[in-house]
Image (cartoon, rainbow, N blue to C red; front, top):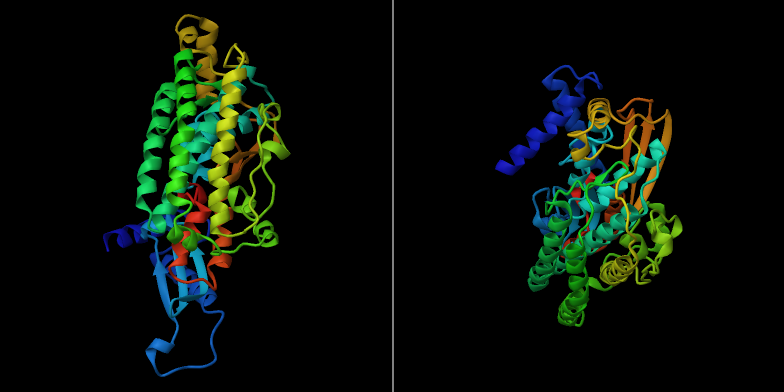
Length: 445
């Protein structure tokens, strides 16, 4: 009840914040709007109405609320289910319980100030979010970054991809009853968080990238630690696979469940492992290479089964490909600077700010007024662990974005949930949600 009360308050606060725009002047107006929203959801849920009415209550459909507090929804996701026994007739997912208004918030931040906010989107892969926002800002401004910074960004992104996929692997196994795998994947993720701490200074919300490069270089001792971990990890991964991939219960809970045909996956706008699990080869790292991905050898992983098992296996196999990329980066990373020499747009190093007048003035101007690109619109997309992560900036020539639109892959991927769930059993819902691997901080942005 306490959580439900908090969610009600959160929903009302959002509605109140929008009341001026929507001309809602009183609490009565807000309540009426909320009532109409619930009526539309219920109407959509009941649009496959039956024509026969039975006297026995057990022969009638029931409506079940799954979430937004259900642990298997991977966050504050509400799923309304219409059931005939344990068969799902209709499903209506409802997002928005975690809405924090990041797109609007960006309009009141400088470009540099918004970087830490991206840590809180897909919070399982903040280093990928940092890379995406920095690349989008640099494309909007029109500057390039040093070669070593590009290699470092790829290295940290692939480490974050492995960390995210390990979480997806463990959580999916837990959802269908295999708790041991979750504990084992967390052990490996802890080792990665130790590495993230050495690279960025923190374990979770990294804020590592900067406009023009990265915050600091990676030491040789840290690179050696990454190399040692990458050498030891495959044996641990093989151990995970041997335990779970031939387990009859696990395979039966995943194989043939949550079918998503390729044409439907494309039509619904899914990307990442959800789309590649339906047999489509789209991967921005290959289709539209950014940073130095065109210099690296790796395969785009696809599966043709189009079910929960396929989406799970895409992530497991992508871990191996990310490991292949990490070895190449460690072997080929060049020496050099990690921050571009662009005083008009790039913050100077603190040691220079404390010792030079020009650097002090530059730091003051960029912190207070921001890096101001020319007027225009730029869309930049990267391949995050969840799919296509895009940033659409509209610049009005000032140091703050006129508008930011986030193309969050989890938001699009969740559109496929209703299609996959309808016709399935109630017990299959948790497996299907786990196969999507949603992060609601990103979906609700």
